[in-house]
Image (cartoon, rainbow, N blue to C red; front, top):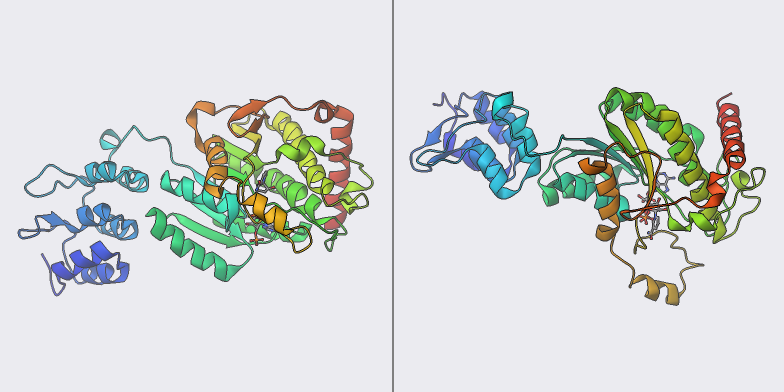
Length: 386
Ligand SMILES: NC(=O)c1ccc[n+]([C@@H]2O[C@H](COP(=O)([O-])OP(=O)(O)OC[C@H]3O[C@@H](n4cnc5c(N)ncnc54)[C@H](OP(=O)(O)O)[C@@H]3O)[C@@H](O)[C@H]2O)c1
């Protein structure tokens, strides 16, 4: 069973998730399918039981049988994964099992990219989707924060298929840089969740001369959708979820002022940017109808996150009120549902208030206004690239 390696040590390393030690013993010739008479189990069965999926994958890659039966019992890695409710383990085992032995109960696995997944609703959505066994990539501005977050999410969800890409959405060029990274490293994504968002309490222009919430809440999702559409189409069925806000109904658009913050207001500017986001969602849905990719917008609820926090606005009273708002976990429910639920596949161009489909307000049905926005957006993006 082993030529120089030590099965017991490898078994315990499988339990604790010590990938390098398992690799070492496999390299020393330990048989990944050996089941010790005292332990009456093997390394793969144990790694699945303990949710150590990096180890499980290593063992499978090194010849461990995905359908091994536990000595003196009937359990298999799959029966353990089901018993533990570990969907990531079910997906992993399915990818090593022959077609006829796969678990067919589970919906197809998705690879989901979430912008701004480091806190608030984005982070809670990432966690939800990992617990559902999907592969998740988040975009994050701070590299160090990203590394720590990934480590913690792996521990909390027992799903190791989480990674991050560093990137900022506050200028046109920085969006394009992030988009290029996504295309290069994650060309297999089939869900895009445009979550990153800001509520500016004072006017700030970016280096393109654009007001920052117009940039982050509208133009960045616009660029991500346009540029990643071919990738998503290639991986169809695919979905785009735009995290919008019920406040879009209060928004207005002055095409010569809004992009440049010339009509800036602490309250209305956020709503204006979400209005633009809704108008784009409607037009893009028409453009991609029948392509196998869908796009919808959603209001996730009124959620206690860091959104809009600022020394000026955050009076003691607002801080107190926020404590009664719903949790980020609650806020992640509806976006996660819109991203993966099989029952709503094919729905395109709709707006949801949490899980309830809503009529659009008259303002966004105005084709002339939407055309103005589209023309202006094309003008802005083309100019910046010249
Ligand atoms: N909270 C609510 O009640 C509510 C209601 C309706 C809609 N929404 C929408 O839900 C989404 C998430 O908001 P939240 O409440 O979770 O807010 P949040 O806690 O403030 O999180 C915002 C996220 O966006 C990221 N972000 C901000 N500026 C960015 C930039 N320039 N480039 C890349 N990422 C950037 C943040 O990253 P950093 O950590 O690096 O800043 C953070 O991950 C937003 O689109 C928001 O409009 C929220």
